[in-house]
Image (cartoon, rainbow, N blue to C red; front, side, top):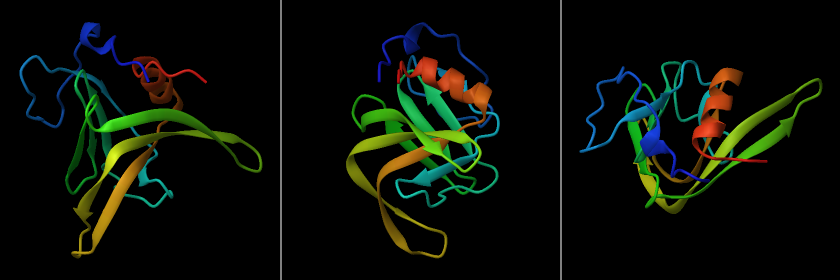
Length: 136
């Protein structure tokens, strides 16, 4: 993961009116991500999810709330993973956190999250790969 280029990227629209910190800008906002999941592939988000990348943070909107991760402090690694299906190949990104976070599901059940899986449609996948400086 190489995020040094994010400061030079142009800003995109802040569709969700996210509070940004000083000198922060949104450089990527997904159109229709397939899913936001935990490490095991269990969905964390509903149909109104959104994956947002700023020059400082990765922000995941689940439809019910936000997960926010500082790119330098909270994220240990981000790798693209290839997954083979019977007739096609799919890809997702595994974002591993430096330390697990606790969150509460709708209904009150407490969970721990040590990594997230992000799946995109193809145009968004290509943009995210380039912005995060990922190579296979």
